[in-house]
Image (cartoon, rainbow, N blue to C red; front, side):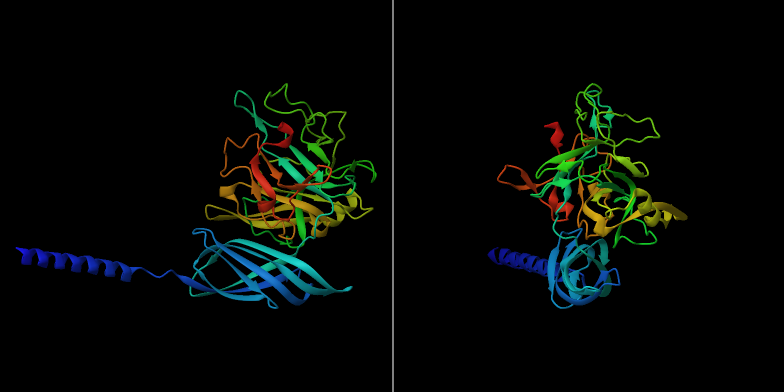
Length: 406
């Protein structure tokens, strides 16, 4: 009896051992891809003398795998990665020449949804000159979602932009452009010409009036640009009073609300319609001194084309936008919705990330929420200091209570 039990145990052990070994031996190794990545600075007329130092970060979008590679004195990277779909960010310093001599500058590049599979693959990534530290006004807060009434109805018109002086000097808002992008962050197309590396394509532009010193903004102070500068509480008790806003967006040729006590923004190009889910980028910019609205439009208006594909059918499309040189832009923020984001609609030199209020399209909980820049400290006078790294993913709190509702 004992011998039979012993034999049975030996057989069971052999089966268990065989099963374990079989399982281990059948585990497929993780697929690996050798990537050759070439980094190119745009525009092409920039003559790079030296790629001083570059950092390339990879994040696989399905598994969360991340790795960072350092490059010195080269713009080509050879790396082996787990096969997948990647979000890639590059930042660093280069030395280039122009007609004034040698210049050291920061560069940045972003690509998302990049498929890296197979044994070997080669990719090219464009880098843009990155804007320097901010010395002008910034977009502190964008309240774009609108609100809901106590009865649950959607209410719009109480949207606003909060623009803040994040420096220690008095600045003037006069002539500042507030720009809405022509392209949407949830709808990527192959636009031609592709000029995003050097310009911001504007779909709507409004401008703060003034003669240059009419509207001072003290250090730490803010101005409010309201969609409708009225007290919204009589129409929606869950809304706010914007009758004391600094400026209002007023569309002259439509049935818009006018508060005579609040200065109107100048309508420069098209009508600015604020999307309640985001989907656009917004920027602040200053035109060269002495340039008029008419001159800017005459010199910078352009037509773009793209192919719209629906159900396998291709439809040639075109549109009109105003190209705002990146060097005019002093601040920018890309907005989107988390599950429908496709691309940045600005050069990474202006904004390397994006922010949102909600995680999915049509979220009914988005109303009454805003994106607000993070506070990183205070001045001796008790004024907030806001984070501004030209990366909206890092700089902004998303889906928070708008400051004017406090």
